[in-house]
Every structure is written in structure tokens, then in C-alpha cells.
Image (cartoon, rainbow, N blue to C red; front, side, top):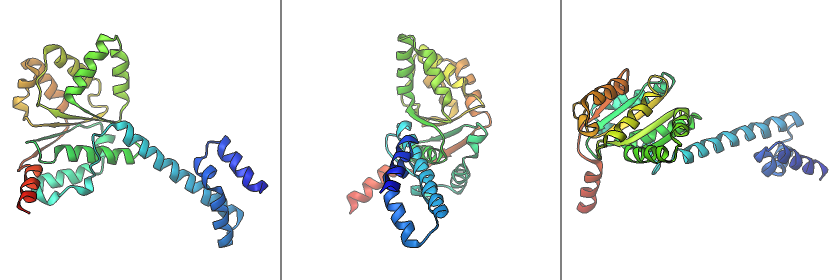
Length: 249
């Protein structure tokens, strides 16, 4: 009993959540196996590390603010053209994160851009990377609110700390001059140092429709597309196809 109490106190003081919650069960299982005291320590501390890693992944996924969870394993790569599926398979290694390269996913609504982006984001979380998901319109809104509250500098500092930022839905809503300039300045801070994934329904030659200013648009494309992986996902909407299949059945 004194030994059990000791493990409980150690787990509490050292903030070892697994040791604190599972020491009794671990002792019983180790005794049943006839394992040595050294083997017991190895087992319980190894499980503590695994529990911390799992909790860390869960915390990163939660703080990334994904609208829903989509995994790369659920992507039907066979439905994509071979070149596109090969590009997505290459991205699964996450080497683009280590190299600070961007990823730009272009295509019509429903072809799998957001699914791919979120899947890569979750994979990054599982590699203990800090990720942020946000739509471009919401980002513009947050930037303007931060500027109004004189908190823009702090916002930029937080933004640069993320290993990966996923900017979804570029092109669905245009910006005013102020919004375009705020976005340009923010993204320039991450240029060639930290990765960004952008999903857009517009090819580069149409980005001026969003930003309004041709000079700013050219500079934005130049920074974001330099050494980036650009994937043009062509095809019909998955959602429309699923709806048709559902109606047919």
C-alpha cells in the first residue's frame, strides 16, 4: 500500500499523468508477468511518454481549429489524374515543411482541395508540428480587428510561430485595399521560412480579381509560388457526385 501511495505522489508531483492514473494496474500486470523492477520502470515510463505524445497530438489538432477532421488515408487518390495523385503522395512525406516551401491547391469547389489541406495539417500535428487552419476571409477579418484594437503586432508574432498555416477559400470573396495590404504583409513574414498551404478556385492569372491591385498581386504570386508545389486538381465535384449517387439509391 505504501508503494502504491508513493507512485501516486510521484505521479502527481512530477505531473506524470499516466503514472498517476495507471500505476496500480501497471504494478499488477508486471507482477503477473513476473517482470523485474527495472522492467516495470521501463514499461510504465515508456507508456508515460506514449501518453504524452498522444495528448500532445490531440492538443495540436484541437488548437489548429480544423472545421472537421479529414485524413489523407481517406482520399481516393485513384480518382485523381496520375500526376496529381503522385504530387499528393510526395507531400505526405511533409518534407515541404522542413524546407519551408508552400503548397498551392487549385481547383473547382468540391474536388478535394480542403480535404487534402486538412489531411496534411493533421499529419503535421501527428509529427508534433503546430498548425493553424483559417479561411482567408476570416483571416482578413481578424487582421482588421487586431489593427483596430492595436494588437496587430502581437497577432503577427503569433502567426509566424506556426510551423504550418492552412489558408482555405482564397478567391471566393474579394478584398478591399486595406485587407489586401494586410494579408500581403502578413504572408511576406513567412516567406521561405515557414510553410503555407493555400486552397483556391482561381488560377494565378485571375488573382488580380481578388486583390484589385496588379502590382500587389504580382508580388503576392511571386512570394507564395516561389519554390512552391502547385497542384491543379481538375475534375467534377465529389459532393455533387455523392449527392447524385445518394439520389440514385
